[in-house]
Length: 476
Ligand code: C2E
Ligand code: CA
Ligand code: CA
Image 1 (cartoon, rainbow, N blue to C red):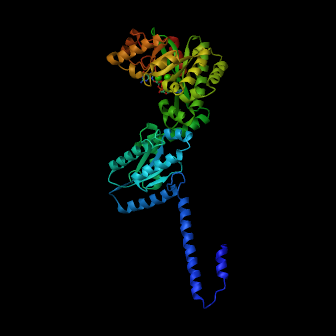
Image 2: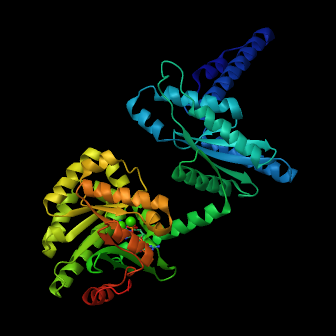
Image 3: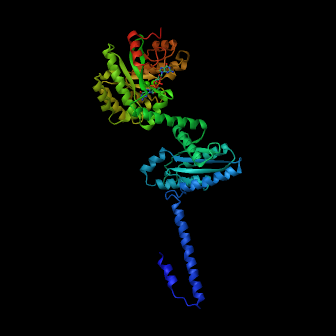
């Protein structure tokens, strides 16, 4: 209870001293008013994020709710849109290394406020803002606004932080095209934001095809987790022949296959990236590696004893600190000589942490393993790096091989790749050979191995064994 107030009530008032009573009443009113102001101030504080000074998400929800009912009653005409803006990785890095990041956050919010006025709110994350775009003439107008915001956020900051800049990603959904309720609009703005982050485009306007893709991806994610939990149900390895100039099968690339009861066969290009993103690719990778090695051991036992197997290694699999031990463990348990196993890595995989990658690669090679640079030509293709990495095999990407016999430009590139590989002591393997003319060009120009539908696609292990025993005939 409020003591002071009780004091006033208890004070004996002379009945005739009305003036005094009035004075006391005024004072009470005055106090009450001041209290109300303070309550409002407290409320305002509670409603704002202390770091950015922005109104919190609950207020966004309420405001958007009102704006939506207003828009619904006004009917068609000017557009209402919402945006979900997240600062990019450059901000995250600054955040960890600078104590002034709160100021930068505040200033960033201020820059956006200059464009959208009070229509900016703090999301649940500190580096994420919610925006309302009111009264837009059309989607072009929304995009123009988005452009302005992205530009404003991405500018260098002022001194003393004038060495700093970071960008953002922005997902936008428009009422009523992309949703009629707050939940729908927010959900779809979130999908657009994810798309924006994935593609590295600063802002993305939601589109229905995006939603379909997103939900399909979600479905794949759930089903993939289930498949892994149930002992890799529906997953299998197929093997594609790696063939030399004499048409002899020298090795097999292990390629994963997933036959899903509802969706049918799902391509690894669709589910491996999902597995990578959710961290499941390590389990899949370890499983593939073990199965491929065990399979090869069986082929060796069947008499194909100089066959090797080539296994794809995903970026996060390669990053595992105990990768070398894991792989050592697999070949030991299967009792396979290291030289029979090739690991396929892409440029992106090794470029992220080049020094660590080089050390790891040396360790793997010291166990006898061979390393192949997959999809060569599609990444950085930095020649100086190539020399330091010391791969054993260069796999020339299919995009240079398709119709190489008809394309002088690609011919030049392939010749240069083969020459360079030779100079660095690497062998070359051409991917995706589908036509005899392509094969002829490659053989004439000194390519060591080929793989492609011309000889055979990836096939189940039994079929592969039959091919390897009888020799591939696809080329003749
Ligand atoms: P990749 O490593 O570049 O594998 C070669 C892809 O080219 C395979 O696709 C193969 O079926 C396809 N291919 C082979 N010859 C031809 C041809 O003549 N023409 C055409 N058009 N395509 C050909 P696939 O099996 O769909 O695999 C796609 C990608 O998925 C692989 O590309 C690889 O990056 C990834 N992947 C597959 N299995 C695994 C795995 O076990 N682990 C990991 N981490 N990734 C895998
Ligand atoms: Ca590969
Ligand atoms: Ca490849």
